[in-house]
Image (cartoon, rainbow, N blue to C red; front, side):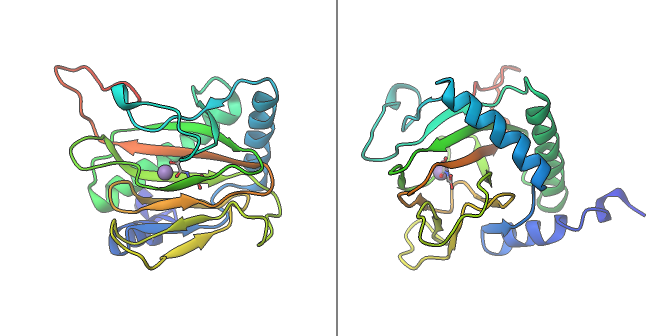
Length: 215
Ligand code: OGA
Ligand code: MN
């Protein structure tokens, strides 16, 4: 049997990305994976290792509390929980490339903590020709999220759409993938601490063998 037919997630995931531009996969992370990552994230947050997230890149980078209020920290692969997570994301990268030929080259990912009241207004993660981000992937680490606690991820199908495509609870283990250039999205104000990992599969924009630094 071919290795590529072993992972039952491959096909629906690639089909969702291809046909709609987004896909939701409940139970992508196991309860054990979720717990290990959440323990690390909560500890880092308590140790004040997360910093307010900014908006825009390079010279345009600025803190705008009207746009987003999450706190983040890049994954550097320096703990077993992160290494395991990054290995899972590497499998996902290969699976997407195998099916869709998107030429995903690497991943940048950060822990994110949205304290109560935090949100992230409607935005896209990339713009054509100005960003290496191709596929966004968000994993949630929150046990027993209830409808009514806010913090939902809202997706629209196209840059100009006004009709919502999906509203996703940030439930432990759920993975959401979408095309970074295509899909506007928003995090509604949360009423409880909301923990997640947001990652971006990037194309190779290196020049002369020098790979773009993570933005
Ligand atoms: C982001 C983002 C969505 C989420 O970090 O760019 O849109 O559900 N996150 O946390
Ligand atoms: Mn985003």
